[in-house]
Length: 299
Image (tube, rainbow, N blue to C red):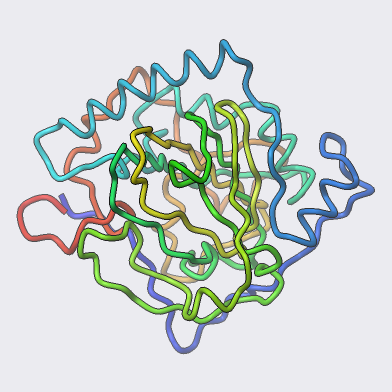
C-alpha cells in the first residue's frame, strides 16, 4: 500500500516557525507558573492526567494493540501505530479527553484540532533511538502553534529511555537538521545538527498516567532502551485552528479531527470509527517507524 508520510522542506520555505508564548493570565487549568515554564523551557512536566484505574485499563488495551501490530504479517513494528484513531474508537475517544484539551487550550487557545496521534513503544532491549529533533521543522504547517500531549502508558525514566528535552531550544525558531540513514539504529531519520551544543538535557521522568506538554519547536528525542522494561507513550498533536497546511501539502492533515471551539473548513473532521480495526492500517509504514524505503509490496 502506498502511503505518503513525509514532507521535505524546500529552499523557498514560507512557514512561520516563530515561537508564540502563551498568556499566563488566560490559563484556567495550568497555573501561572506552569505556563511561564512552557514559555521559558518549551515544556511542562509532569502533569496529572489519568487515574490509576484508567491507566491500568488503557495499558491493557495498548498491550493488546501492540501485540496485534507487531505480530501482524507485514512490516509494522512497535512504532508503527500512527493515526490509528482513524480505525480505533478507543484512541479517537482518548483524543477528546477534556483534561487534555484544557491543557492544550491554556497554551494554544480555545479553537483546537488534532491532526495526529503516534504511539512510541520502546520494547525491552530496543536498540533504536529517536534523534534529537524539532517536530515543526518537518511538519508542513504554518504558523508554529502546536502542542504535543505525551501520555505515559508505562513508567518512563532514564533507565528505560524516557524522552529528553533541550530546555529553551524552542526559542530559536527552525534549527538546522540533517538526514540520517534508516539503518535500524534510529526511528526518525531527521536529526538536529550538533545536538550536544544545545546544553544539558532534561529527562522527562513520568509515572504511568501522567502527561507532559511540549512545543512543536522544542528539541526532543530519546535514547535506545537497553533495559528489561518497556517504555511506551502516546503522543497527541493538538494545533490551533488558525494554523494552515502549506499549499499542496493538504494531504498531511487528512487524519485531523475537530476537538474544541470554532474550526475553519480547511481542517477535515474524520468520523469516529466503529470498533477496533488496527488491521485496516496493514502495510502502512514509513520513516516515522524506522522502516527504510519500500523494498517490497508494503510501504
